Amino acid sequence: MTPTSTPTAVSARGVDKTFSTKQGEVVALSGIDLDVAPGEFISLIGPSGCGKSTLLRIIADLDSPSSGTVEVFGTSAHQARLDQRYGIAFQQAGLLPWRTVTGNIALPLELHGVGPAERAARVDELVALVGLGDFAQKFPDQLSGGMQQRVAIARALAEKPALLLMDEPFGALDEMTREYMQTELLRIAAETGAAVVFVTHSIPEAVYLSDRVVVMSPRPGRIADIVPMRLGRAADRADDLREDGAFFEMITAVREALHGAPVTGPRGVETR
Amino acid sequence: MSRVTTSRAVASRATASRNAPAVERAPSSAERVLAPVILGVVVIVLWQLLAGSGLIEAYLLPSPAAIGEEIAQFAPSMASAAGLTGLNALIGLLAGTIVGIVAALLASAARIVDGMLAPIVAALAVVPIVALAPVLNTAFGADAQTGRQLIAALAAFVPVFINTARGLRQTRPVHRDLMRAYAATPWQAMRTITLRTAAPFTFTGIRLASSLAVISALVAEYFGGPRGGLGGLISTSAASSAYARAWAYVVAAIVLGLAFYLVALAIERAVARRT
Ligand SMILES: Nc1ncnc2c1ncn2[C@@H]1O[C@H](COP(=O)(O)OP(=O)(O)OP(=O)(O)O)[C@@H](O)[C@H]1O
Ligand SMILES: [Mg+2]
Image 1 (tube, protein in one colour):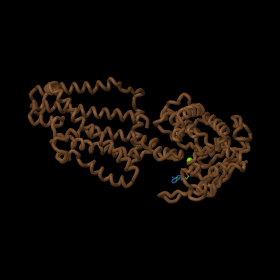
Image 2 (spheres, chains in turn green, brown):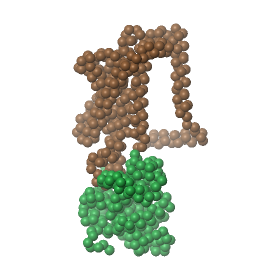
Image 3 (cartoon, chains in turn orange, blue):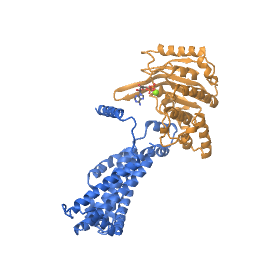
């Protein structure tokens, strides 16, 4: 699948992460090996506390692994961050409350020296993309949680990154907006050819979006199984897939992988 | 334990709002202005009646009418006195604010500076700064305003420093992560996140400092130095038994203090609107 000339988007080898807290050591990740091909859509799913956010943060070089290595597009995660190879959306929207929707989306462009005219044009595109045209001049405290999250997604997409890291970005959205955003995300990822590492609690969401679903198990956080989705290219999927028999087969496959995981079971995982 | 009290407070507030009438009418701005004005008029009328009845000696409490006459007569002198004291307070406030902000920035940048400044600020916060007035007045000479301005600056420095230092620690982790993810330079992160998060705290400090600066500049005049300020005129009027005139200058001092406070409050409100 990966052309030999282009390096893999993400390559994690033997990644462990231990946090030392006052209560003692917490092993958040243990022996993580994961490859993400360019343009591939990967979901991380697993019970709460199994280390999904931690793994994402390590790929983003916001945390460093206790041992093991992470490469992003053939360079260290650190270099990839300095080179701005990824866009990121956090579990919390993390908008700047004193900036409008436009001001928030423009932030990365501003920091990286994009000129005002180009910036304004790009921000307009992004505002339209996430369907917030009527709210462009509103402040975050005037938006619903779901709208705030859409602003955060637009901000992550601002520089057309070749890798998107997303931590439960649709968790705060209502079901209809969520399905709309899922289809939009697939379209955007296909258009930009971006690889996506996507954390979610929802099995149907993981199945609908992903080329492969990475099932994780807790204490210590490890990869229990990687389930390939035999649903055609993620980029070609549309809403009617949600009623397709193959879709339900894949949901069953992921659910079984989750149940087969050691420890008590998929607590905290939504099956809707 | 504190969590228990908090949740109980929240619970009782919730009950209170449940028992409140279904439609709660906020007082209109006319009502909000009218109520204290009516109260003020009533108090002044009662005061006038009391002072006119002869029950209270004029040197204890001159009548509002007498004070009003003094105000009318000495208005130009009051204005220039308020100008002089106000300028001392303003210079002190600006200097104290600038030094307070710079010191807080240094303290947040280097732990050593923080360790050095913390005891100094703690000492300044408990020492009544006007107690330094006689010393500083002498140090800077009898005809300089410098001592008074310095006292106002010291008084203003404390709340600005404390509040700014606190504000600089309020940066949210998700914003720090964001800046790191964008590989922002330290200066960019400072400008976009840290300073902007701290700004409302600094302006709260400036609001507190504004009143302190006026009080300090005024009280410092009681301890000698050049005449012509409100504080000096209050003490000379009282010393020459011109009680109504002394009260007239007190009224001017209240107006001056209020003016500083209201301007600082307006700026604070404007800055804090989105945080
Ligand atoms: N900074 C930290 N310090 C100490 N422990 C941490 C830290 N961050 C995460 N952990 C621990 O690491 C484990 C994994 O946390 P992580 O946030 O990655 O889980 P998650 O899979 O994202 O959970 P959720 O689905 O609830 O978001 C948890 O046990 C958590 O308590
Ligand atoms: Mg998480």
